[in-house]
Length: 263
Image (cartoon, rainbow, N blue to C red; front, side, top):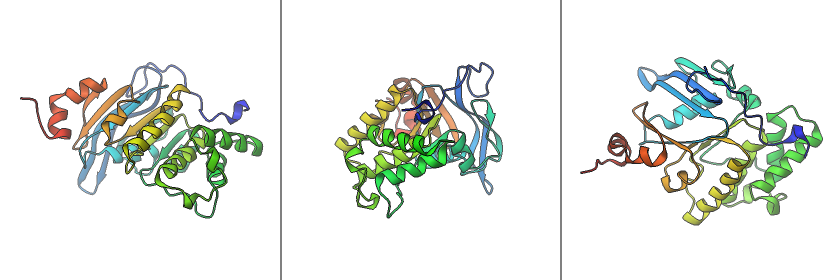
């Protein structure tokens, strides 16, 4: 594997003064707000993920979790605030440009390119995401297919895959772009417990390679096996941010996310 074909991009330099965080922030949002008409869906959010860090996001339906991920990815335009990647301002850039700069997203519902094999799908990601030569694209795609547990299915038509392998392919296509930070949008949704455990094992391999992650997930037991830090949201605001166990015990979080408080 050549250096230019590595699937994990650089994790950035120390940036003590970066908005939203104080230590090697890869991706940071400062005072981020999103409106849909008169409704403020995100309300003055400060958020960051550090180099090599995995951050989970939880909250009830309508809390703003997916909107935050969409704003970070560039598919939703903020009404106010800023977003930066390794110190580069992304605020006015669309999703395609952000992807090429190092922000990749895997969606809850996989939509592989029909009529193409697994490897061909991943090659599209490798070709889109980075400035790679043809051979480097192929090398990266092969590496990602292996890491994501799809090597035996590399020549299978993507539309014939079951749900778990479609999820793996969704992850692989995002990884093939060579991201600095990977955004996961409920990638465990719809999987059985054993399938979710298999997917977690793959994501833990990415963590061992130094990948920075932001992961929205309703399956909390799965999420806490991977993350360093947990962010809880409600009504467009961050209501808790810290160690996963502490956040899940937080009275405000239990009231908003779990629908109860401790007696």
